[in-house]
Length: 375
Image (cartoon, rainbow, N blue to C red; front, side, top):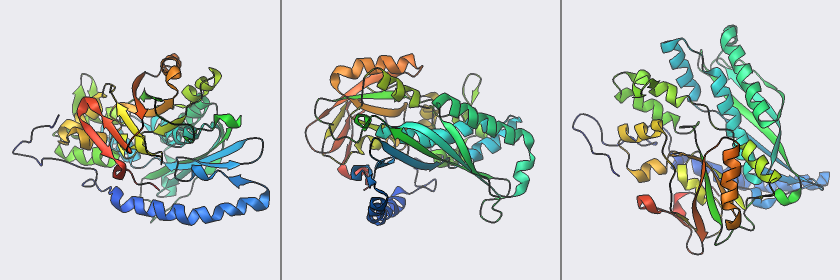
């Protein structure tokens, strides 16, 4: 489906036009990984070693003997700007929800390697001390952060709350989280060593845009006559829909472990959209035969940004927030386990031998090996 262009607005709004160019960002990531790889040898002096295959994955894994430790740091990005603007327009605070988004950015990455989240640390950098004077906003941030920790059964260890005038804009806050987890038993490690032809691809539903693609979503406001208050469904504004909190997927991965199901590989579908399904370095063909229902806010974004399906699925999660690659015999049971945790899921496709590519058959989309360069 390619949305028709009109005469009174631009044809397509891409992520790059909104200020995010992965072609510029990704080379730095690759360079940093290569420099960081040389530092892994330092672990030997402590009697530990890195799991080399975790380099370039969503979380870094260290072998400490009887189990593995995994760690990750992630930031919320610009979703806080939407929360601030919606507060100005409606008087409602969304800081409890974006606290969950921040933790989800870290935990949903951590669990891709098979880790159980243990500890979360907070980084809340404000543009000045005055930000913390709004007690209601600050208390909502604290309450939402604790609520997300309770959902994931993770300890909130502490954090940092710097006032960075001149670095962070006045009246703004930069939210980030670091998370440490444990892979125990070691057989839970899911770095794709056993991934191969015949494995099933199970997609877990998203709640909306999550916390990726907000730069484009904010840019789109310029095209909307009522801005963030533009209705996208009865009783639901564009701004409210954008602020639906990101799904926390660790209850699903923990329930899978309890059910005796160990994913072969996992992918958190965040930046780069469905191209994240190509994250594993091996050459496999990923054939998608069923796609989940797209959430209303993402349908709205695609329509008003005038994006074709390839652009949309290469940018947003389009209804699928997390992918589990499992043995085919475990596929339906995986869906049942996810649904028991209140998260919709479907068996969307399978892995085949062949060139490294993603085929989304219902939409006629193909992404090749060059669509995702994170190593």
